[in-house]
Image 1: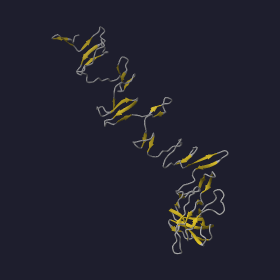
Image 2 (image 1 turned 90 degrees about the vertical axis):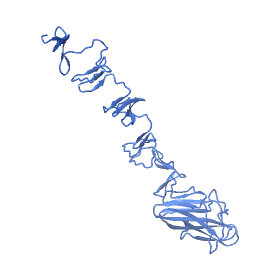
Image 3 (image 1 turned 120 degrees about the vertical axis):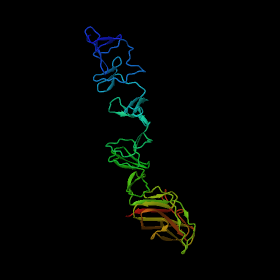
Image 4 (image 1 turned 120 degrees about the horizontal axis):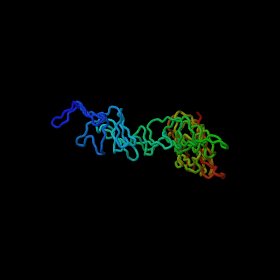
Length: 391
């Protein structure tokens, strides 16, 4: 060691060999401490730096840094950190290196949650992978919303759904546009339903749709008595009364006291017009101008042995319809007289009321009464009103 010197008890040299074969050398340069072999500890409790005087950094050029007795945590020369046993910590920050700027990840209730720099938090994914296939996912939480943030059903969607095949047990909606429906039965607001059958009863069947008050595009209806589909046009409604209705005010040639005739039977009531039992008013709604044919018949009775007159008029929206007036002369006590009339009416678009009224010159006259010939069964009627659509 010719370049070696001792100064005040210190060894000064450029290179120091620590074994007989001069394999391991230690030297110092202006940039740091240099050695040409492995740095091995002789005990388990050796540290590189301490908590109060730590090392500022460890630079690995090429190769791998192994931590743990089996190299559980490794950092390769590309800077990739990996672990063969996993990571264990309350939270992990991902993204920015500045604390509080990245995303903090943590687990709870078997789900991975996040917290961002603005304090927002939530699950990273609410879906789980099915055990039978990694391509099958499922969700076991509460309600899910697409296009809205306050779902009240299992799946709430604000927008359109486009699918090739839709399989559902119940479909409820204000507007459904479907090219093809494959189902056993289609129901409409618990009013009725449409279904198809084959075999001994083959065809299309409509249940309980014998009435609809909208008055638009009605072509067939279901007759619950005959269990058949019947044409709703031209027949619009037919109703009758079975009781006796006295004339309460006598009329004169200068003052006609026409009083409404009530109809207590409305079981044969078709589309377009509404009617409440024991009412004289029939209400109908039309989208366009319609020409209707009305036919009425009234059975008058008299209890006075004199000649009296009786008449009837049909009213549209409270106004007498031209051509609807018809009268008849009544004579003798307890006699029966039938008054009939048939006429056409142009009804404008919109909602309208129809009402049949009758008048007589004496209060001894009534609409209906006790027939002179016993009417078999329930065949007796005191007033009838029928409406047929012509155009």
